[in-house]
Image 1 (cartoon, helix red, strand yellow):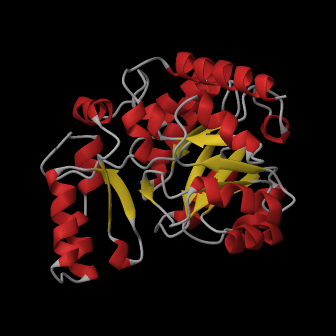
Image 2: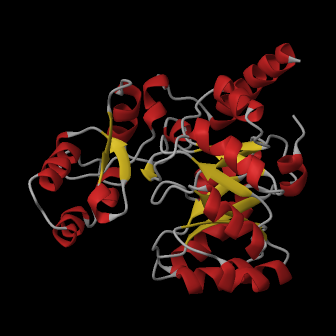
Length: 309
């Protein structure tokens, strides 16, 4: 399946693994890259020395391209922007801000820059800033989200820009990939599907929640803070929603959630953890190796797309 994205990133499949904080580390990134996609290491707010180590571990585990996700609102963003240059990372994806201040240096270093966008307006802005491609991410995604759906957002972004568009949000099998391509996307980004992979090192409790999720087990909290976030519906997540409805303040809400992602990913703490996950989790029923997941999805997608011709 050759597209503008496979050519741009020198990968076999037009697939990017989501830059999930505390989840997307060297082991998962290398597995996705070795399977023919583009693995990502999540920068988040992690210490720079730790991220340098993860980048170097990934280089030891794969000779294929991989990338780093830079959350531009994070306190480490400036250091990480320089680190990817120093370490020769070939691809950077960005979120939560405008990467314009780093663009010239990244381009000079030969780095491909792919911002994640939730709207047409931001897509156009990122194209003007010099982005090589865009991830149009629908509200079905896990973690921090916009309000537009993937089905509505992707074709509008495709029509609005000239650079390649990658679809994200609500994609977990070949049917979703084929649908994204029919909407005009040149590739897809997947996060939630890889939570249930053998190479993903999240706590077993997290994996079991994903496997046990039904179509109604997704919840969005934090809308009143301006930073809505999708996770699996647990007692903790429902308590956050109740807190919002009963008049809690955004500052109090943020204090309640500090450290909750680590508690989910590392500790598997059901009572206090935020298990960020996309609405598509109800389609995921078993844990498989990354390579098997990727090859199954694209075999299905290619068959569907051939049948549509």
